[in-house]
Amino acid sequence: MNLFASSTYKKYFRISKACFLILIFFNQKITCAEELRAIHADSLVFKNKFVKVASINISGNKKTKVSIILRELAFAENDSIDVKNLEQLTKRSEQNLLNTSLFNFATITHELIENNSTVLIHINVSERWYLWPSPVFEIQDRNFNTWWETRDLFRINYGLFLSMYNVRGRNETAVLKFRRGYTELYGFAYKIPYLDKKQNLGANVSVTYLRNNEVAFNTENNKLLFTRNYTNYLKNDLECKLGFTYRKGIYARHIIDVLYNNKQITDTVMKLNPNYFGNETKNIEFLSLQYRYKLDLRDSRIFPLKGRYIEFYLSKDGLNLLKHERVDNFSAEALVKNYWQLNKRVSIGSALRIRYKQLSTKSYFFNQALGYNEFVRGYEYYVIDGQTFTVLKTNINYQLIKPKIVNVPFKRIEKFNKIPYAVYVSAHADAGFVQDKFFYAQNKLSNKTIYGFGAGISLVTYYDFVLRLDCSINHLKEGGVFLHFMAPI
Image (cartoon, rainbow, N blue to C red; front, side, top):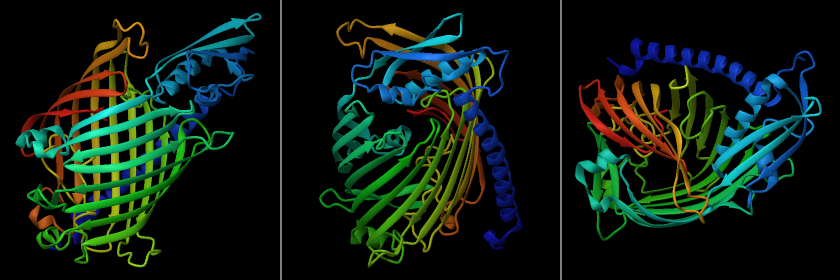
């Protein structure tokens, strides 16, 4: 029986598509309404209980420009605000400032004057350390557990990244990269979030060159197969990117990127997998055009407990503008995340991601799906390649230790003398499905529903650091303890 013509397969994707479109529709209506409420408060007059924002006073910003801080506020000078929404707007503005990653702490207070008809806003921020000459010592594997299986020191990267955040006090970022080891990397990047006076249009540029002595050339039984050469590089990559962002409000942004890609493999890799790039070629050169839309209404970008996040992504690899452009791929992806805070300690999170990809030729390199950046918990040791996939994640968190601040004896270095932290315990359940029409015969987890569940504990602290331990079991009745460095959803 032809799997891809089967009624079960077609029914599954029809149902997934319908459910996803319904979810997007209702979330879009809700989130747009919430964004309007967050920015403009109620439009109805409540017995004339409005106050006018007379002034906004800012302190603690030794480097950050005032305009960058004002850009993130849910109100402006001379705005009229309903009193019953004042606390909500100041709280939301604090969260917006922290989500810029410019500050360790941000506190907003208000003072009512003139018979409670006028309000003075006071903002105090504690800036982060913005210059990071960061030594690089990291594992190359997809996650810590896959590296721990072999403990192979060859699969270690080392070097130096020089990151300069908040350049000129305008939230600009400059990064110089020098990394040796498993994946050599040389490059630079510069991001300017605001080019115009209205602070709507931004730009970024980057150039990255990578090369490897080891390459994953194929997947069998949902495990990567590698080939290694200690003296010669087996794969080289050059990527140049120019991008633009448009952010008219606070919570939504549009991103357009144009990329030039040049990738090469050696005869060794080519012989092991003639379909590595497709068309039995060792070199591909192509342009890419990418569009991304983000709507972020979460209370925290690092470890959210309430709010919503929506993202759409479109990509076209191969624009038929280069002389030897042999790539012609298209992909569309959408992600919806929801968070509900049931009380002060308990919250629930869910995420639905769907990707559709159309490949012009049978290509292993462009066929990655789950097990890389996205995965079903419990399957950290596996990769599931394919074109189209659906992943649903659910999580329930309990705040074991409420957010606290520890004072440390660095009186002269105020950017490090206060350490916030919180600890959460959680339970999770995930499910996913990957459709693969090229290599499914040698990978048993393709074209079938997979699922996993378990429990975990997360430590959240400053400078956006999350340390998480998950104990998970999958539908193969395989269990394990897995280490991650990101929020569960």
